[in-house]
Image (cartoon, rainbow over the protein chains, first blue to last red):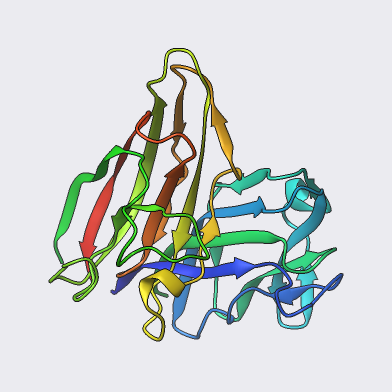
Length: 115
Length: 136
């Protein structure tokens, strides 16, 4: 039963200009693995407010399960942290949507283990 | 699979001297902690880390001090000073005189990942980073 500390994703939201649509933040959980996401951090790096949303993706569906992070507006230089644990099974992934590209730094980390 | 509970890093925020770790395009941030990976900061082991708490204390009795904290992922293709850095606390966060800030949100670091800190007024903010290191 292998367990690994993992940083599932880090970067900037909508870095590739995926503005105003949900896109996956990392590859879906592979078959035979499961993830425990124990922290997500989002920091607005700019002096202007910007909004974003986080959702669970499964197949072609997107599920809003983070009401605190639905169309959340981050003020200038502010930070949002979600530290309630979330488990992801095979094929599942976290998705993000940002209204402006390349402004919000994020780091998502947790534990990967065999399913 | 060895697990070590330890103080991952402790010290005082100050700019690093210009030189190996410095890059003209970024502030001269101090490496507060880097998860061990051979060849990175003199490490010989390969270990991942779980940061369980980070404490920052402004020792200055009269003035606020601004600081920031960034996460830098290991990137085999880039030297350290050119790796992308991501803020994980509010940008240019202000600590009031004698204020303690404690962040207990867990943060995982894979081997070679690091935490960088910078204080706009050097030598006033003490820091302690606590957590667990684990063999990979």
